[in-house]
Image 1 (cartoon, rainbow, N blue to C red):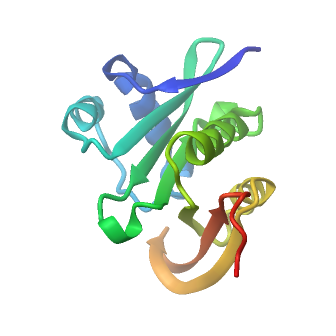
Image 2: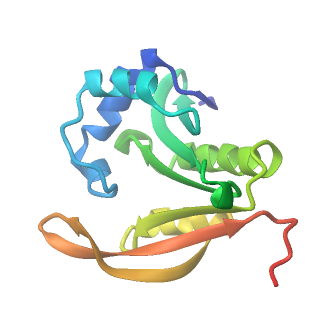
Length: 168
């Protein structure tokens, strides 16, 4: 089993669409379901320059997707945020970890980011644990912040700082 991470390409749109076609995946995002392959093809050609798209490959198959947003606001250029999803068939096989390793390397060594942040459903225990393994901490809980499966749900605001940064 070979895992690798690379920049997403237009040819990946069908496999990325297949990831987000799963209700169990969409339930854990803030996106709306029923995104088509055409949406994902157009997504890459219309994306702003300050956005990076990665895919994780498991034996040459797209197993997961990550979008990294870099801030163009001069006062927030040191902050990045991201979202990710892994196909249910490949969850808990190292794909999420591989995406996170690449994210942390890019953040610390290439993008000059001090802070990475994200929002995650507080009941998504596997995701929260994965982020904690990469030194993310919960900064706060946002109560009733998202609508999920017919109910309002809580989310965590999590963040990680560059390891060389000394917090005051």
